Image (cartoon, rainbow, N blue to C red; front, side, top):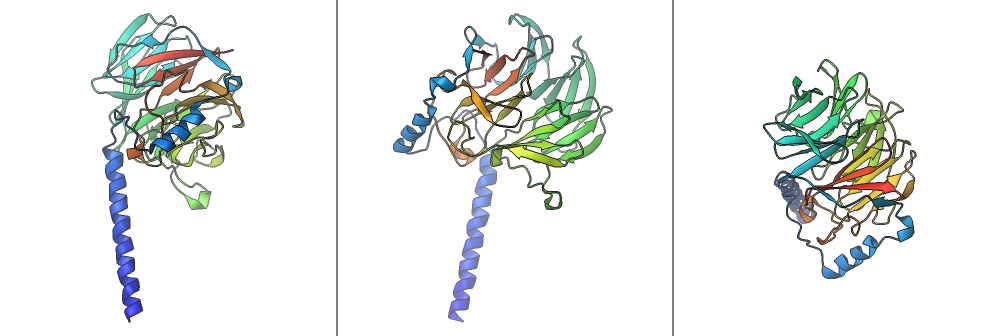
Length: 342
């Protein structure tokens, strides 16, 4: 009986520890403060991480064009490039549209802070604001407004094809699939062992998606350090990506935080913590570096963290234009850097 009682007490203690740990994790997620950049890592560990930030110059295959472009935002969240080369920046409570030479063209007020923006094939802006999706036509007029039926949704990314609009939801950890009439016709990425879908792991509120020319949706699974390929019906076809601080891997608790598609079918990724922007080919093989901490003007402490509360630096957003130039939005300094292949 003594041994049995001991086991019961041990089990109760283990359960209490798990409950406390889960509660702490939930609090960390919902009280996530991206403005806090203090590192909690020991000095010797920070020094080791900084050694990984020193990138072999031979691996850096892009160079910055001109100086960083200042925006008039207090807080930026997302960037998108139109087919005509215009640059769309989301933040504060507005979208600002820049001409390709970065002369401000137009400002669209959104009423609440926009969390993502995408440019559709007909130059319509699709914007995430609160738990709805706002469509603004090329004349700046609201064309439609769809409601996401989840009050707790945090909408972080949009992708489109000819018949669908996909919206990533970082809280509910799946992608809402709408038809072009605004009807919800599916959910992509939900855990389903019978379909070999392990589920999306999102330790902090970064969850990016992109449409790909092969018709498969590319989905960042940041907690697993993967980019997954899904059919529009929600079948997971394949994935690529590895966890690691080495140059080809994705570091920390939850990377990459941003994904874009290059004209040749390659991928561009951005990481937070150990800040890096990198290029992979269509099969997910590492190609080279766009920019590391030095090229991005990073002066805050670098960290590779394992939990959201340890890694609160803002994640950059990015996109690419039709000529293969890569636009990096620094959401900490609210500046844009443009990179071109050497």
